[in-house]
Length: 326
Image 1 (cartoon, one colour):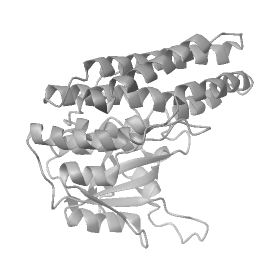
Image 2: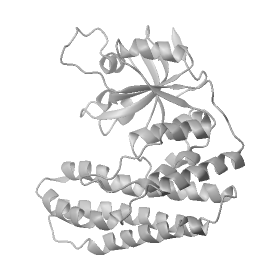
Image 3: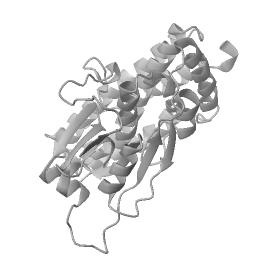
């Protein structure tokens, strides 16, 4: 029997949010926030409101912060209550129970069995990623789920492998982390009211921003990493770039989008800061491509000026967001 928390969704006709449109510099950001963008979109809620968390990201030594919308922000903005799912039994059966209660289920899964990753991970490499389940049919072994840019469906062998259906107990197997989302307090605030709440959250995240310019701190590490990666090859570079340049660039594209949305709803003049952060995002995208060519060609290249430019954009944008100005 098919059980759906959001009846009526169809993977064949689902329209993704514009944040995942072809016009974006970073069509995908990271699996967790991408899932939430589409979950909110499907619930007719505004994803732009929960994006201020990106302004607190930092260079963490070997990665940029893997930014996520905090659970308390999701509750403050939309009334969504996210709790950990204690995976004590079969995840597919527990997901069926939660979906039957009108809740969504987020879980870390193996992208090897997710057909929407065709061309990257599907049946190619085992990679942990987060999906959000909203429809399941245990008898027909079918699943409707949000992942990356949209809403998808899988069935048959993919379902069996993803949920380890019928596998003998394996004492070495550890289930991935999972959460469920209560929708019973969901609140669709008027746009102006939602923006006012979001502006308060922006102040909270700005108070947590790095005390020193993190792009400047990243510069030395990145330059050394590129030289090291010339001997490691492009696959290693792509993994490194996802953890560093993609998180940095995507974060500030989302940040600029958030500021533009706040301004449209009367919460201040954020045009200058949005422009600075868009420039930071765009320059990061160019750097990602130039560094890839440097790694592949193993030739000397001076990427320092681009990193200096990125650091300047970060500093300028943060200065333009100074609370005294707003």
